[in-house]
Length: 209
Image 1 (cartoon, rainbow, N blue to C red):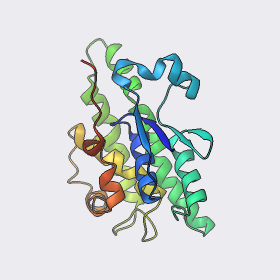
Image 2: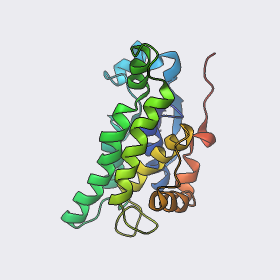
Image 3: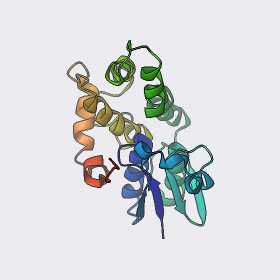
Image 4: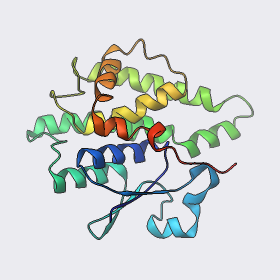
């Protein structure tokens, strides 16, 4: 049995759900309610001492960090998410990292909450998210191909990272009109069954009041 410890709105979990879907795998979803602090409980810390999601139980392993998990699935299930050519592989990783290592960490829920709580009222969650997501996506807009995918004409690791970030942008009210390339790519990716099935609205988990 494959088990995914995740949170429905987590960008990192969203990436892994897409990859699992692309691999055609069935898995059991085990929610970790980040809003209730479940990620800091002893049971989850035993799975991941970082107190983060996702954690994927597969092949007798407990895997953490979404990009590492996606690359594991790519290598073991032959998903073709990274090009065979070294130069293209570097480009795809650069695009993926522009989201997962630049935009995402600073917009992590705990980071944004900390900034807002310690700003003396000068920062809101919304203003923080917009101030970092919008310029990050603007830079990515200039980096991607002018087609249906981020790079190379097929679905790659970069696309798996883009989809959740576009969801976050819409959630925080960011205007995507100035981002025609990313918008077109996102619209196309939404037609991919594995991408559509991984959407937070399809896997929404109840939160504690």
